[in-house]
Image (cartoon, rainbow, N blue to C red; front, side, top):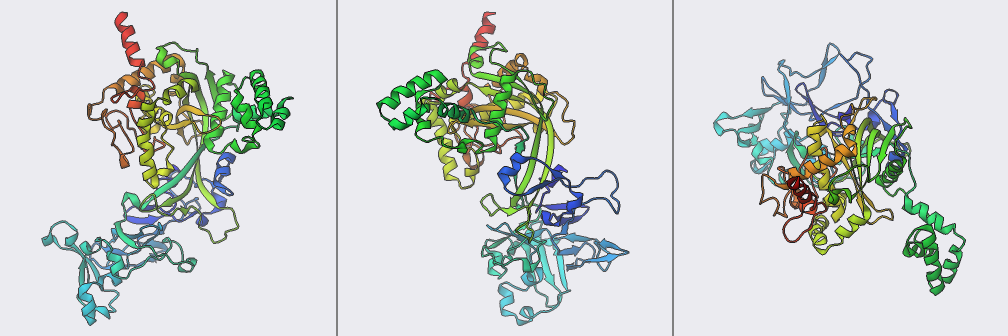
Length: 595
């Protein structure tokens, strides 16, 4: 069921029992057999639409069993017995057959055509391609050949094992071309083969605007042929951010109108100071509200994480959670555990997430690269109806860590820390696709790296494989409600959720030693000193001091695809960079030596 999101979601090519199939968009789904999933928070982000779960079944599929439709792609196949190349499709005794006229098994061609920027896919017109090229342009018998059923796919053992040993030959005119000619730059464009501007399951009449982007021949199983665009949300009760509540209190104060009336004058400054002292906020906050920076709830829920952060803060204040809902968190204060001062002073709260519901939806997909056009999950002809997004719901458990804002702000204000993170900020700005990642300000890089270190350690202690653990980083200093926290969780499709192996480690007296062990594991990497001194690692050099020996985890577990990581911003390092938790290990080792 989860595979209908990724890796085999809408638009993905799937190999099943020797056949190559592609999943059409959700307009082909049987709506009566696909249950609807509710998650208002996620739909608010996606816009008008419906979340639906793909049908499931157990055991042998019967005639009336709910199922999804798949399209055969590529349509061109060759016979493994006679090597005949065709688009032959038919039925035998009421069932679709995948055999040649000679009863040999049909094997899908290994190459397809992908649009470089439009995310379209199509068959390579093998007959047309075979009869083009330099030799074909001067030979009239090749140019005007009509032997459509005489194509053969041949393997020439005398030419080695490369593409030069694979060729398509027409036995009508005798012309043949090697597949080595297919993969050269601009090959399909030179042969006059253009993009059809559609997906394989869409009819020809569905395309109104032609696609001008060139085609490139790729292997049908290449990873870049399908890049899923997913979005997930925790199903939690929405909470108003603290900044909104504070702004409401300020506006409701009896002296607020005097501040507004004076419009930044000396009286407004004096009254704002009185009001700030009474409400326990800063004078700048009061003046900002009076100036109109908070005239509406525009700051509320600008992003899914905003609402989640506010909900977690409320749960941390509530202590033991006895609600019995799909969002159960036991909150612990900063004084709930003892440990090194360098760590305890920076932790503002811990939450044992005993139950959480996550909904994951597929927005669409891209092909070839992350800069290509996004193809929606629903390509139905009726634009006025609500689009259907494939979705799944997962139930799980986790650990939430909140960090002290004052300590974090003081640390990240250091010039050396800002300069270190600035390397990643610049590289993110220089990469077009990297704009989809979070801004790598110091707090984000440090907390993201710490999350990875903790996931690697939790894999040993929780009973879960590291690939089954996921992260959600709350680290943004630009919002009115600055965020600084980590959620590490695991989720399963069963309604009963998971087994509690992770949440029990969320007790502060157990979690603090785990964090210390995670820092100790990362203190020395097997690739040091190269790793710790590096600032150019990972995809597009979007990692600094981080590699597989110390910080990287499964890419499916990381919200940034193993990017924006740096051990120096956690543990310190060269160039006078002070890490967020650099005093923890020396303090622990000094205590152990004294004991």
